[in-house]
Amino acid sequence: LAKTTQPISMDSYEGQEVNITCSHNNIATNDYITWYQQFPSQGPRFIIQGYKTKVTNEVASLFIPADRKSSTLSLPRVSLSDTAVYYCLVGDSHSGGYQKVTFGTGTKLQVIP
Amino acid sequence: DTGVSQDPRHKITKRGQNVTFRCDPISEHNRLYWYRQTLGQGPEFLTYFQNEAQLEKSRLLSDRFSAERPKGSFSTLEIQRTEQGDSAMYLCASSSGLAGVGDTQYFGPGTRLTVL
Image (cartoon, rainbow over all chains, first blue to last red; front, side, top):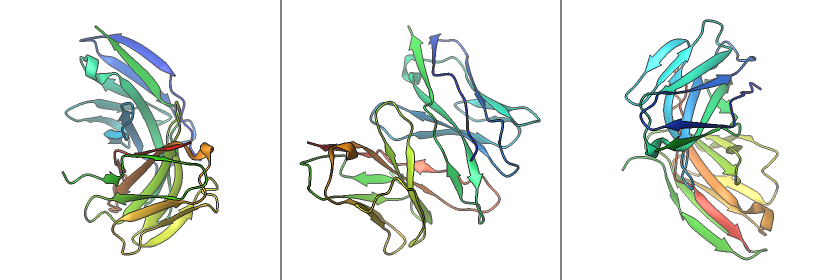
């Protein structure tokens, strides 16, 4: 069962770029890396997913080195509304592609005015 | 809105009562998952359905818990004889199960259960 390690909390000022790094030393060959954002009393919201190198979408970038033992979520120019908990997950691939994912405690990002 | 929906959003019950939650996944998603989340923790996996078949259950899912997905569309999670320790957010997620891609799970808003 792949495990992830990420900082418990981070603070950032509005307008800054925020990078949250996650370690997943035991990631398996078929596992994808997925990041979710969660606001209080809401379900996790999918942010981005990748397998290797770099992935970018309209809200974030995900950097994955060649050994895939870590990944970095990059949020450009954060605003107060980005204050949330961010979870890094790697899937345990089962036959048929089902990925049983395990959430850690996440990184609580506080954006300061 | 074509996302995952859950009903009710909040449920307050007395200890010993039975409760049932409903989840409607994204249309045409054949995989459905239930999670439980307590304060300050990440979601914990409870169970997984592929269409109508319940293929995996966590040991967290005691015999007081039962989940169904009778027609491979919506799902229900029932908790019998509720205990105060069952108080949590119950989250449902669904995924498309498409081969060749990371099978992204999309979550609903959750049902907050409070057992008095």
